[in-house]
Length: 534
Image (cartoon, rainbow, N blue to C red; front, side, top):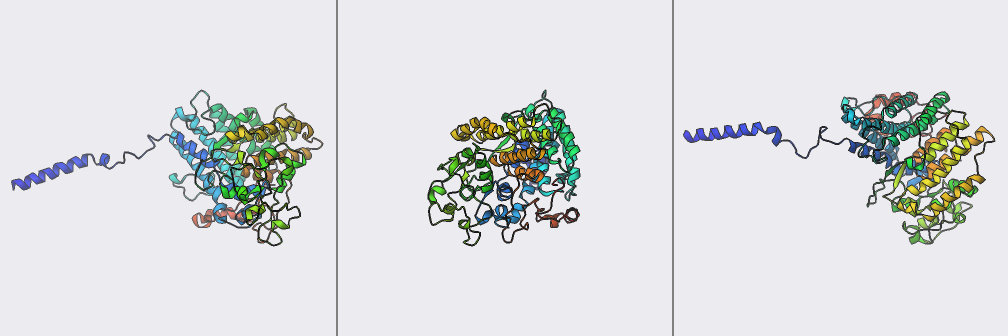
């Protein structure tokens, strides 16, 4: 009995001691929590995921606006408006990637909202959230906004807000965040764009405000004018040092997660379009030699990313959109200006004599993706000035000149190779002479608007900011593009004006999806227009 009692005593003591430390023993010492997690890390991840859009832009927008072209079937989504490759997946890619980026900023805000010493981080989070949601609504139209990002709060089936309500809400949120930024407080400590410089964030916020304001220039010019003038008065970008950029992922595998044309398959199969190269060559634009090259002869040379080609302006030939390698009437060899094959025996050799983006500038996984630039800002100010809005004493012609020069100078920011590239340096030096010969056409308002927005097309095209390139083309109507007509297209021979909603939305959020689709004139299609697209 004594032995049994002794054993029972031991069990009791052991059980009590275990119970006393139950929480401690069963808590993972490596698990983080809101109390110890540094919210700054969420900012850098949000920036990275917004900037590194990969195929989202390459397969759709880059070719819809005829900046790039491809004969290869995988790129039919963009080049010929036909479903190819992972069409359904990429249809929802902007939605998935950008809401993910927005959710990271929103979560960061939740972690710091009650910490006054981190108010700058909170307000930067608002700016990032607006940046992300603006991209989503520009691509899809009516989307979740007021109830978006709130799954933790129990809202898992968010309603879709009309874009006409989203834009005023974004501009108001943005204005409040910029105003609340304080240069007397610490800035973000894990900031990929500005290294915590709050003054730079103010400039970025106001430059983003200008972009959003100009998006309303046709659908609501009075509101656009008010916000554009407010943005200018607040203080927008003043040099290329203000450019917002995010580093790519520097991946060593074959996945193109970092941006367009940074893996071998994409690089050998995609070319500058005929529309784009012809536009630049028509005015002997010195940027041609900085951005384009013709690969060396032969299949091996054609596929070699590290082997520089001929970048002389006279050698450049843009690839026409809408052609393939199938041997029929739309085979590239049937084009009247087909330059012949570079090498034999492989499809890639058949497009080898067309101009590709230069290896020294664009093919670098440790380079940058551009988010918003001084060039774009100056060109938008030029348009605002043409419209007679109060954006300072600088003339539209001077804003235009600043913007075109800045677009060339921004090429040097892609990577260290670009910053030392002789062709880029030469192009930058030649821009004053180019602009003397090609000043802003001020003969009529429409002539000015046409030229300004064509240069936004160039500026966002050569910096590979293709979603913005497409959005401004839809908004302005310039340049005038001839749509590709190709069999079995998904947009009836017209350039897509929006992206249909994710294919999973009808099953995941059916009632709100139905309501949203019912409000779209033209239905949930590529040919319907978003609210501001007039």
